[in-house]
Image (cartoon, rainbow, N blue to C red; front, side, top):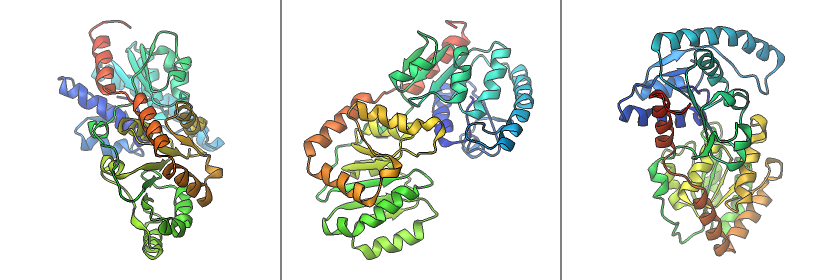
Length: 351
């Protein structure tokens, strides 16, 4: 299992690994001590082999030179790992952590299944995806990055709880604003400036703000007269979706998969510094399907937030159309489909 650094790479790989373990296989991960995999993978009981590698995209010259130096050593270490463990197949979520094991797999002729969740394939996926037996994607347009006939739209693994989220039934119009586990300063600042007007309009808001701004925003929220709450982190996102008439969020692939599974209308504000601007392209793909509204980070002010909420409150039919469009994009069984392909490759099937 190759892919680390962020939850967006690790969580889907863990879902596939759990499915493989349920079927009687023994998955192991390759990752770094600096990435989130160092905490999440051992907690799930999977072995984790260590390499040292950093990113290239968006890095300064010193960091890029260090990464290129680390790459050769990491590929050699991965070749030793593959020689020792003799895996029947490799599953990759892409990203810089996946590059050394993928290169080693190519050298040792280990068949690969790649999952690329973004509308635009990442650097590692673009470089090495041609060697994968199968590319599992979330957007039709991503197929252009891989050899013809080798891709399939499966979406990302999403917990079943998201597919069971019921339609919202609130007395007060309820907005969920979430900037991810670390929060988003852009979303936080727009929300706080909008609170006086939203309080007068009896709008309820849950703001997931990250730890850095939790204390100051909690105090200000309490003084604003707003209904709702401010939280650093939301443990039960399906429950929060169930309470929301509208979700305002960044546009990472994992978040979009959950919004689609839950059938929640959303305003997407892509993180402007994401690699290859992939969040904007994710959000554009959603907006083209009528499954979300797109607002660029530079345009997302309190005034724009108020306008989007007013628009949504005044057009319940439009909200339902957006929710239905999101549901149409949802895919079940992505982890199971990945496991199917890995089993097929492991048994000497189509490569």
